[in-house]
Image (cartoon, rainbow, N blue to C red; front, side):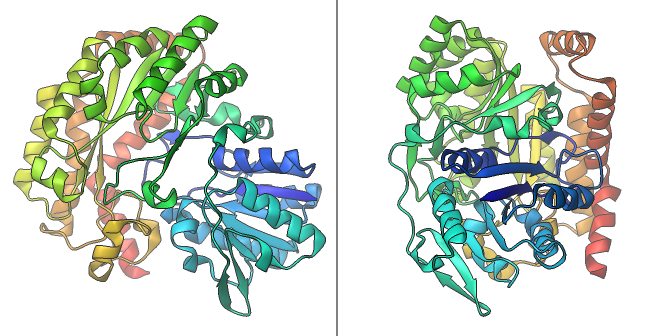
Length: 475
């Protein structure tokens, strides 16, 4: 059977569209499983095409002639675009079967109760999609496929859930060759030539604002060090983004992976995500991985106030955040520190936050607005207090709850966080030297730098948010 897997293009009002474009590993994982069963698979990443995305999709359907099209919808702002494209391939292009999967789909499937979508894949999709496609090809009842919700006569029928895979080492490698056409377009900030690596799934923590633990049922499962190294050997790109929510969750495993990489003489430039408390307890991990190419750590600081950290169930402290930052700095590893701006922020709160960033001289701070995303504990608690229902604005840059300040003042203060932080970039000498060398190597085109600069100017300007708010009020 021919299956076309589609990553919709992003239509967020602001977001960080021009700051990163990550390969669609979810679709590559599904494709790997389908190929194992002998199906013909094509991936269309509409975010990375040079032409009109709708035309690209239409041409792909006409040329490839798929019997089924699957869409990935992991992020809330992508819901409307996913539905729009699903209707297009079903009604206009005549594709027989349409299904959707991804994080948002799994935690809030009701959004996809439309006649153009035959089935919703809930949770991990490797085995579910294989069985779903098998049912499509044999014209068998969808009621026999675990882990899906299928639409029938205007209603959604929920099948029994699929058990989580106990051994994810047994999964096929990502079908990266199917995104060969787009791979040069994937990047993270200044890091072009980027590939993603998944070494584990889930997170043992349960932060209120996060849907990861809900998606994976609170579980944490990891691939063996040997499997991780085998996957890395197949990656051609210089930069690797480890997509695990906390790469150092299993300290012993992280050290073993490092030992194997050193033995195999595999050297990449890595960006990882890690919790500050783990870094503080095991600073040796940073020095070990620095030797292997660790260049950047994404740490969720979230707040500078311990009481607020407790409120969102972060199970961490501001002191740990500071200690972890200095451990990374000592090892010449850059830190991307993310902070959550609550809608109830006062002008004093904004000032305290920017003062904190300046004091630590954080080179890459990231600020987002506290957003109750569907599928999170926070959403269940606050859904009756939402002032904005349009998913387009759930991009972590717009308040969807009532703000303490007026909207105009809130946007002025929020944009000032970026404007002030990046106006006096706290870049280390090593950072500056690296950027210069990277540009001279030809791996980072000059127009890429201009695109990043344009994006930063956009999110640093209050009018950007105010104008989008005016647009929302008209809709």
